[in-house]
Length: 278
Image (tube, rainbow, N blue to C red):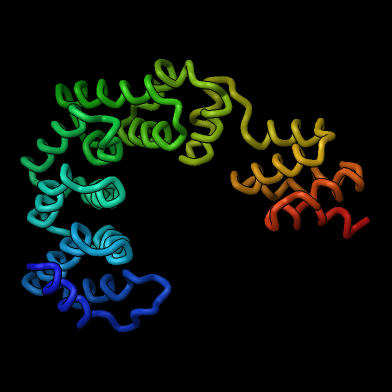
């Protein structure tokens, strides 16, 4: 199926092209034709073509749809075969799809992903979520070594978050904490714990205070308007907003007013909250 043919086929499926979730029509169609193998195969093929060759919006919609519907091994193998030639954003979308459908991957495709990840673990880091969770030795040992090489070399929060998720999914999180993560800064690990929702599973074994505790102490000690605005911004981005009114209520109104004046709109409403009550 060519890209043009894929677009034509999917245009027949679309009910509301302006829908908020652009993949929903495809998911609904998948349910409608669930018993028709030929029709569903054509839907999968069209979505896979958009994932691999469509424009950015088509790629995102196709990836979301493919993650939400059953996809057979043949189409997954097609995605695997194209993976090495895809540019980073499209490659990331394709790896997300493969991670969701890892248990449906044909053995050869899984072997190819193993080889790709072990040869280029940092470039294809998201594949760890596809190849590690169900791996057994000796395959697991080689894959774990590749993942650990990224964990050791990187201080990037996004990369370390993927490493932590893959380690947790393969029941290797304690081993990761005792090795590569032991040398990482508490600040980085707090971000990883927050982003992965692994939280205390990362922080407690390493005796690291949680983001909420650190923010509470930092806000209590802060006397600089710009710094206070920065701390509130950090709390908002981390989703630690429930205790903000209580923390900020203890601050001097003049400090809050000065911080609000230089803050962005999301932070300003938290900084101005206690002022409206005073």
